[in-house]
Length: 139
Length: 139
Image (cartoon, rainbow over all chains, first blue to last red; front, side, top):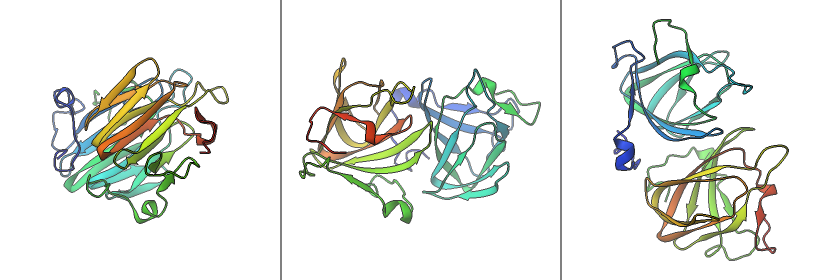
């Protein structure tokens, strides 16, 4: 899908694409593939790849160590994604569309029938501090 | 060039592509085209488009209002770009290559013969505070 979108990765990046099933063992339904370009103390950028119909389950990024929590902008590059954000409802993102999710705000997202590639521009990622609504989830 | 790279913009974004000639009136040599996706208090993401041989002149992003200055990661998407960073020298970026420029560090960059598209992931952009080495430059 990344090749199809014209997104070039180095061999080193291809070797460490993250596949997240959130400990649920139902990757095709509840999962996410990630390429992390950079994650410094201040800035993070990733490509998120979702298979058709794949959902990233509801979660939020709480305040950590004096920071107000992770702020994320999702920009759809290919396919489509339905993004739900607490207080905003459902937002359909098609290529070129984007939405900025405030810190500590519940959200989930699901790819449409073609799958989706979404660029994420954010403050530092601290995945281990993410709070998922489903208590069975292990990030 | 953005179309060729498969980078989709909305009509609204196409209407406000920034063309920077730095007040020098020599756009083809010293200039830069920019699409700003997002620029919040914490995070900024842009696409930088450079024509063949076009150079963005030497500058740095100084500390502002208690922040240590803008931190930028440049990721080459198409073409090639020669990036010079004080203390690191010249770095050639081809598609998939990237480099993180520390705050308040002098740098310049020049596209190769095919031009270049470079994604920039950074802290907030405050272009009006940039310090250029050439005193004739007006951002």
